[in-house]
Length: 328
Ligand code: MTE
Image 1 (cartoon, rainbow, N blue to C red):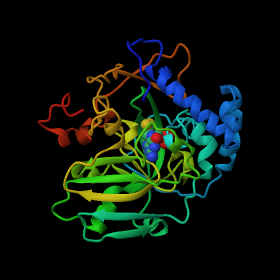
Image 2: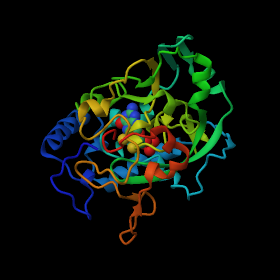
Image 3: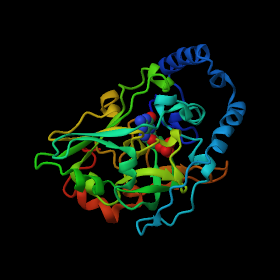
């Protein structure tokens, strides 16, 4: 998502083009990764895909089934192998295949989530208690990355609103900030100065309370693998993927709008709202179409991106009267 490109070409994704300074920083990062014995990073793509394979097998993770949800999309699912090997999790590297190679190192136990800020029931919640807090559902959601690709993923979790009800925010709470854990010894990407760490995302309170906003613990009926944000993440299907923050260890209820990592890094490119909107282009590329991972053959036409990622009926009311060009 960082990748700079002066003009928009239809045949090459802007995100596939590497600017010189990121390229330089990435070279530096690769050198450090090699020094750490992470030699797989240096290998060409074809070999890297092979090194990722054991992680998929290791992906025989504990079962986490949930009842089917009426909020599920009817789209064809993206293959499991793509969901767990084509990832954005910059704490584990900026290449799509690096999280699958390195995120098994993430320590997801013991784990607790701190509840802070404008809320009555502050304090840490242990992950085992969080797992039991409300009945799990399987929610099939369309996911649209700001870079122009999409997936359809069967997530497992419950509405974030369930947690909010229990922790009881005060009347002053207008926003919620989510923070990803910092594990410098497992997260090799923290050495890459692409973002201000830790990764922070935020929602307005009414967005956070919307039933579609999922506190997510699993996918494809298993607990989340590291690369998808173990042990607990957020999934907000009508917003660009970067709002769906991974490996959350802090939730802060706030009176004012939180600073979010992508907005801090490039405010003119990544706004606070970041609702999927085919009518508002990213400054460096169009957002009108997308390629769906798993069905992107050479001749496969791109899909038209839908307003609010196809969830307009459910969420458009949240933004009534707002100029979505201004509040992007
Ligand atoms: N959360 C953290 N902590 N770090 C990240 O780099 N990337 C975001 C989001 N959550 C990211 C993150 C982006 S850009 C996307 S598209 C989604 O995670 C990808 O989620 P997935 O890999 O499970 O498909």
